[in-house]
Image (tube, rainbow, N blue to C red; front, side, top):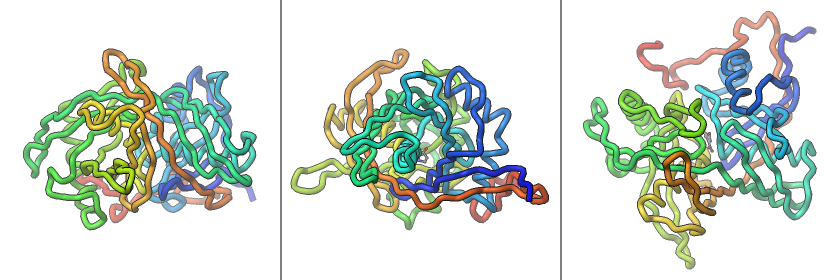
Length: 349
Ligand SMILES: O=C(O)[C@H]1NCC[C@@H]1O
């Protein structure tokens, strides 16, 4: 049997969020930087993303990463992140999945008790430290690119909601952040459907009046995601700071993990508000109760913006080894979406 595509994938999730990793069947693409390669996939090879993420092969709540040779010689590997609506420049849960797969399958040599890995991403170099024991990555901690705030308390008029106050920040993706209690809700499953619907509405209202642009990587512009937050509380004998959040990933579903880039954007906002100091731990909790452990490891400047250097730690588990194939007779080579799962907007319906 001849197949038009045959892609080798290691299935993985980080704290609940699926981040499958392509380890074979996809060739390198041209580009001097990983951002160039991202653009190449976007313009020339987007069929791969649609093939893997849309139904019937994919589903609304998943991501797929493609491992490629790095552009920066300091890196061990490069990778690009494919999400339902976009190629994310950087992603925390996907970094943790990709590192776990690289080390646990031997694509990058594992050293116990810790392995240092340098990953080339479209947002820049990310250094990673994995705690390893008996061939398993027990945790993966990554030093993310600088995160910074563009706006605090930005007022926006949202149809049906009135004036909503949002923060705007970059944590590897561009975020709109909204305090859930300010809308009379909490980051809780009982509000999930409503938060997702309202979240997409707020994001569109902000998009209509504000276009964020990364000052050093102008190709990174526009909003990816919206993050609902709850105020931090302290827990346990050591009074660790803990906060819940839920990130709405387009076209309308919650990140199952505590969202790594969302955590970094949150650290930048909390620091700008004087709510967190360098080195202080923030446990960021997801809608399913899983956690990333984060802190600010230092400071930087991005363009004219003061920035924090965020570090985030989480875990990932391999779930499968699979080969996705395309029968040339299959009527859905790039899959399809149905409005019951994919939050399809009226104009698209
Ligand atoms: O951890 C993150 O940064 C993300 N998880 C899925 C959506 C975001 O890329």
